[in-house]
Image (tube, rainbow, N blue to C red; front, side, top):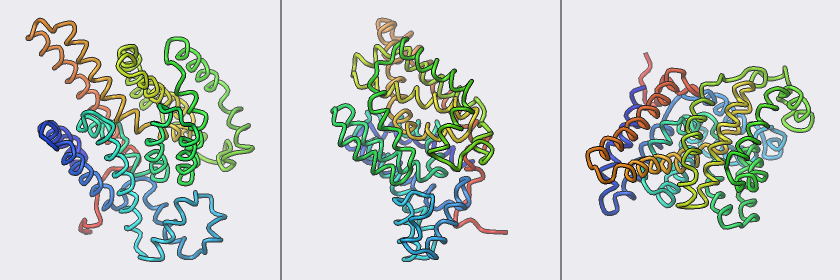
Length: 366
């Protein structure tokens, strides 16, 4: 677990002083990206999907491109993997390339579209997004592409948004859900919409089996009830609670966030739907996968904005009393840091996505 804690502590210890320097943000994003890349690229046996991906890698060498068209995995993933397999014959290159693609996309977005890069990197780690990238790799590539599609919601450019969604779906079909969410994410998040969405969630939990039986007649037919353990078994409510807390914190300051930038409403909605699908996943594990479509912007964009909103509240209330201001802002930052570290530690103890123990291709075998 040491390497993961070094990443978490280093994201702040290096980022806070470095990002205050001229060009410091650029240097920091490069260093943080390199650290994340190295940990993800040269791992061995880390992540529940590590060995299935390895198997797919070698299977592509035995199949023609035509034969791969009949495989269930998305072709935007399989065809490049076949090229790598034919060219190198070493499965490790696949993990190197995947790590490079995901890390580069996330760090580029953090550099250009977030204010405090070190908080975004900290949240990327603390809320398990980095762990997701070492397990649900096809989906995380898709999610990284969708990250850049969000700006087209702001620009009201649906067809450009759609083009990126379709591109993302070539890596993971779940990306197609974003076509509907292009519209849903623009709905104003208030007590009415919160109530409607929550009511729909409760109804689903009561009638989930019937809903799944209906949907899997036409889509995801391999996930029919009783045919796959991820349908019949849930992941438990803990992760839904974590993201529910983050949503409620954002919901409480939604007016402040939207006064600064109306587009923050989209990010608040995104966090809600992370919670929404995590709740579904508590009963049917596979449905939590849809939270992965939203998790990157929720963590690296919204959470830092929420932290800033609460420190601003302290400034407005205690601005004339420096001592109380320092105490209150310190309390806010400490509370967020403690909560984030608790979530991170829980994930490690729970072996979230199979990331523990960590070992590399250079680890000596006894």
